[in-house]
Length: 212
Image (cartoon, rainbow, N blue to C red; front, top):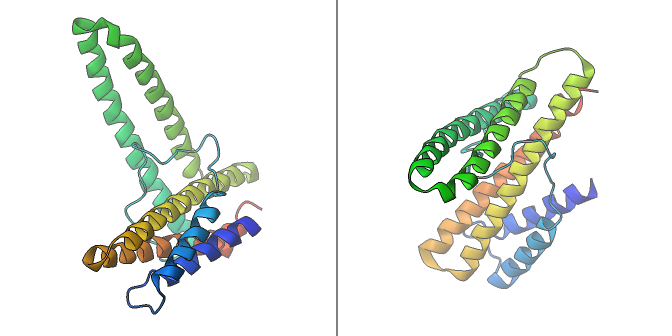
């Protein structure tokens, strides 16, 4: 819990220094950057079997947290997992086509493509299982606890990525001026706000009391 608080406080201090029109000087802004970088080094790690952010699972485009926090987070997760599954299935088709072409024209490339196809198939299998768990309304306590743990793992990695993105925009703001700096400051504020809202949602009673 102390780790989470450190990360929250560092991000909030950095965000205050990133609002357009604030009175703080860049010297203080750089100090805030250092705080965020230290906090980011101890970020939360998602569970081993959770879908991971990356080319197949990019950060969600938005975070609609209106209504009951648990339901909102589950809806965001559902869209994110389904989008990732679509990306994986598209990648599988492309890899399968490339493998068939390699077998005909470049046999030396086939083993690597076969390995890639195997990895994608495993990711598809894991993602389908995670989608099934995410939508499992069974009253079984163990199922709901696992469902909650997977959701929180995904929320934590979204928060970590938003923190990273906010820090990157802070760096740009420090190194730039004029319109570029102002845009970076606004993005820093946007990403930090998203992360703060996710932190608040995951600590809502509808989440904390779930699966107990």
